[in-house]
Amino acid sequence: MSIAETFGKAKAEGRSVLVGCMPAGFPTVDDSITSMVAMAEAGCDVIEVELPYSDPVMDGPVIQKASDIALAAGVRTRDTLRIIEAVAGTGATVVLMTYWNPIERYGVDAFARDLAAAGATGMITPDLIPDEAGEWIAAADTYRIDRTFLVSPSSTDERIAMTVGQCRGFVYATALMGVTGARTSVSSQAPDLVGRIRAADPAMPVGVGLGVGTGAQAAEVASFADGVIVGSALIRCVLEAPDLATGHQRLRSLSAELAEGVRAGKPL
Image (cartoon, rainbow, N blue to C red):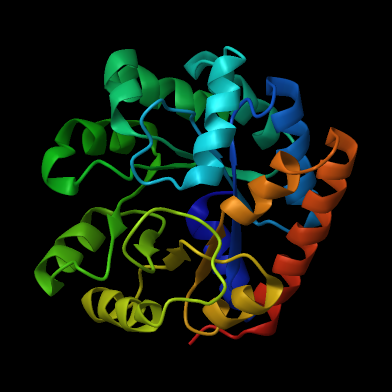
């Protein structure tokens, strides 16, 4: 199912989409597949697979640590594509989140081709702006991959309009300035940012990320956004568990709580 179809289905059900993030290869390739499948089975509508990177400027300490573990274990881009194929093969909607340098090294057109072949329906590029994304936009069009760029509270209305105009599938609204990580409360800037995005394009689904860690927070964000993006809180379930079985159990439990949350809040 494509991103657009996933958001459309959720809208028809009167709820937001739950996007759950997990680094590829954390703590091993097979374990990350198990984690992602568990998240999907427990209620995550979209699995956001993060390609581990040595300099993740947007990611907070939890995602950085998990990515470091994956890189130390030897995970590479080809492994990430294999993970995507395995998770997409279960019927889950899968998108990739990656910094741009690994894609340039791989080859932009070749990567788009292989990403589509693996079953991903979209890609989020946190450090690539539309102004400099001509090659990626062309490749994404060729291989029918939805492209997601980011906007933040500091973005001007002109920047938001330009960015949303180049997105396909959904736009990623970073709810606060700074790196990722679960927080005790949802940013007060988030509803305003979502409103500014909708003013630029009322039809473009908006996913809000950075900070959600509980079902109650998910419900709060779901009351004004089309999608709720959760990363650090889910990763911590595995990262801080005494063993993998416990970690996966906690992961299922939190995914179910978050899924209940996005169903409790009705998007505007």
